[in-house]
Image (cartoon, rainbow, N blue to C red; front, top):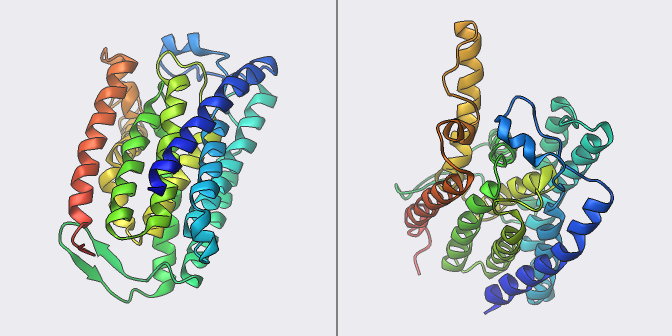
Amino acid sequence: MLYILSFIVAFGVTAIIGQILIPVLRRIKAGQSIREDGPTWHMSKQGTPTMGGIMFIVGMGVAVFVAGWEWFAHGIYNHLFVFLFALVFGAIGIVDDFQKLRHKANEGLTAPQKFLLQLAASIVFVLLLRNEGYLTPDLYIPFLNIEIVGIPWIVYMVFAAFVMVATVNAVNLTDGVDGLATGVTIPVMLCYVAVSAWYGRSDLTVAAAALAGGLSAFLIYNFHPAKVFMGDTGSLFLGGAVCGMAFALDLPLLIPIVGLIYVLETLSDIIQVAYFKKTGGKRFFRMAPLHHHFEMGGWSETKLFCVFSGVTLVLCVLGFWGVMYRYPM
């Protein structure tokens, strides 16, 4: 089965690249700058190599071409579109990481710069999927098995762009402790493998399995204590892949189900800022985003990884059940 080949190839390539890339990142002093307003014990991570997301990006890319070549021969490029869409966000992340390294600070591109680049990428991707006939202006509602049909394209595009930009930044926000974004995204990708296989979309099965394999290998280096961080290079790429797969499957409303952890991380940050301003300096959470709240409450990074990844796995099972009746086997 091609999705198994895709997983194995991505795992192997990522694991091998890790052995080469991490020493190189150390040699060029591509170390992460830690935010001073985060948990104090995180300062011990200062200087840990960043931009490790390059490992699973290359791993996924190789697997998509090796295992997905059959689909290229048949003129099907959906899996390639998803990879390239995520790659654009990864490129934005690379620029951001380079800026941080150059300035020796945890600030790279400005928020407006990131937003405009991400918005442009999202609009181009939606237009591409529409032009290739992969995306409809219909909105399938999981669990209810109903579809809102014939949404005006301009309305759908605004909705799609908002969801994509929000998802990418939510995944980026989740990357705050060792292995967390990696561990949460693996079950999301496995859910996409199951859904795309159920729908008979083998091209997308290859893409999702490739990223699941790459992330599984990356976890060897990223699990606590992390030898390397994915950086914005990796987290923005992951965000692009999470939303890109959902839209390629024409299932954008699956994102808040399987990606509830991403949503909660973002909401906790929004609530914290709003509450702080409204109350003149009081905090709703011990620290935001959500994973830091639990850290400040005594949770270890390993416990956070296990609980958040486990919750996501359960949500992914529910998400699959919620959409499986759209195109029953």
